Image 1 (tube, rainbow, N blue to C red):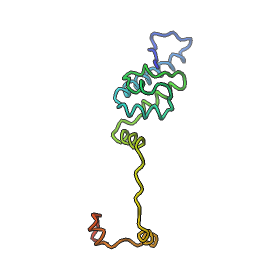
Image 2: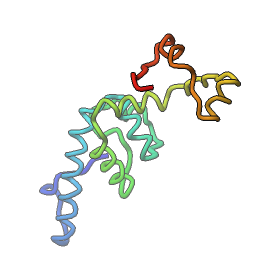
Image 3: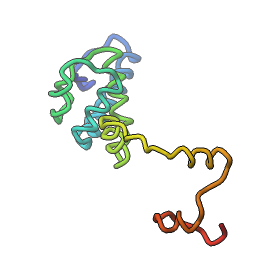
Image 4: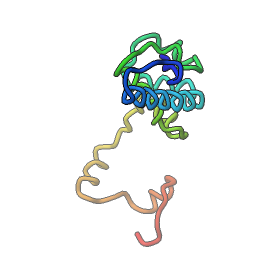
Length: 137
């Protein structure tokens, strides 16, 4: 997926030149963000835009040249990359989406009945089990 610089191409109208210049700026912005993303984040971004070609080589390549897309699909991929969040929670979300679901914690039948009635276990037992107990309850 490449977008060529505007000065190397000829256009029949000024509107076409302006649209291509905008597309090239977006491509450069996406390229800068792509270099900052980890491989896991790249997989997540490509999966979010339903990119089905060779995802492995695209995620491991630091340039956007290995992503094969054109037209509207290329523009969607570029925008998804440009606006991909670059924080730690983003990586954590990808990893949790790939991991197994947490196991269900079983609750005893009599505790379910107490919860249904709006009652809770005695404060002394909750404190002994390590729960944070406020002084007002």
